[in-house]
Length: 69
Image 1 (tube, rainbow, N blue to C red):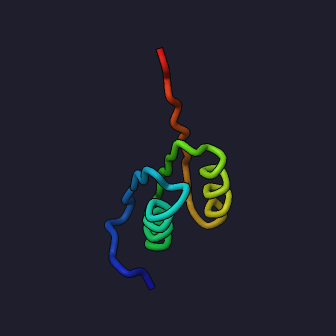
Image 2: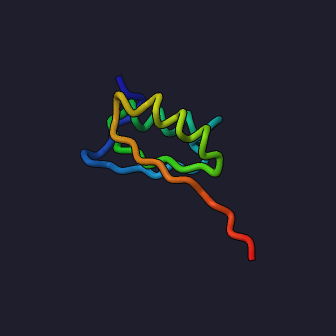
């Protein structure tokens, strides 16, 4: 059972989702039934997170890129 109730169709953006509290937040929303978009500057770690949770939920990932002049 979820720790909280969500509105149907809720979509959530979680930054810093590759580790720590960002990962816990993403997992919590997924468990509660939300569609989750995860992003992080550590692309390899983000790929591992998305692979680990993609079997049970709709997950989209994005990688951050630093653009230097």
